[in-house]
View 1 (tube, rainbow, N blue to C red):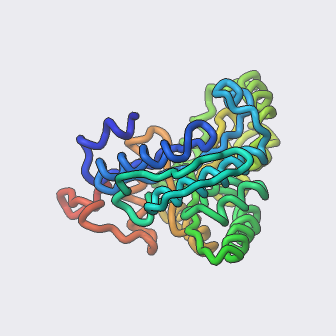
View 2 (cartoon, one colour):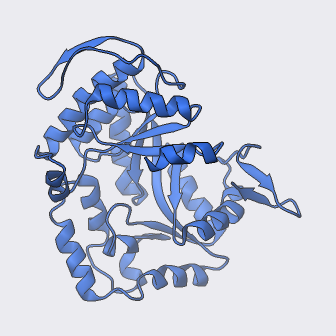
Length: 314
């Protein structure tokens, strides 16, 4: 609903929206997605979420196990993809059952808005290989993430498919290394041992493999910078108190660009980058980091010119 409200006041912004199979009918989901894609002029992206917090899921009426939720996603996406491509589909599976499912108005994007998805378990990777366009991973040390990405590509090849690889990362970029690490440390300056322990207890109930990998990186707890720098300039500080993405690349613009290139070399062709505070870091990364990245190709739709010719990300 928030993204829909943004359509009339934006022109180029795309909307990556979380979609939860099992929470609604796949045919209804197809109609909703096609409608938004048409209304936005083809600016919809969809992130398929199976959920990782059993307590939250039960509150929404979802009681299936981890692997069952991925089985639901498989059946859901089988129906959804067919309907979005103009087919009339009848399907009876273990979890989904439709007869004569179809939508009347197709999406603008063909065959349908791109599907993003992150799942580190075997069940998750199987769904990605069969259905997904962009496989997402939270940023991990290269030696940790490479086997997973290789497995995703191998499984997709079995279905005759090729996936894009996306990396999700926080960025903390400053002009000097001292400033960058000071900014990282400042994020945790008010965190108490009690807050860290409460967070770890909460995260223990999650059945998400990807979330477990994040927590593994910060298992030593907050004992200063060295305890959380899990790879040169890769900091796991966010996972001490935050669920979801727990890692950040920390350093000067040159160093950040070098680290991002390492993931490009592993096959990544998309990045979802963020940091705190949002707007200030967006400008900082756009003006100081992205121009140093050989894979970044600005266009007139994404870049304006500030006085003096400096690029400005919009």
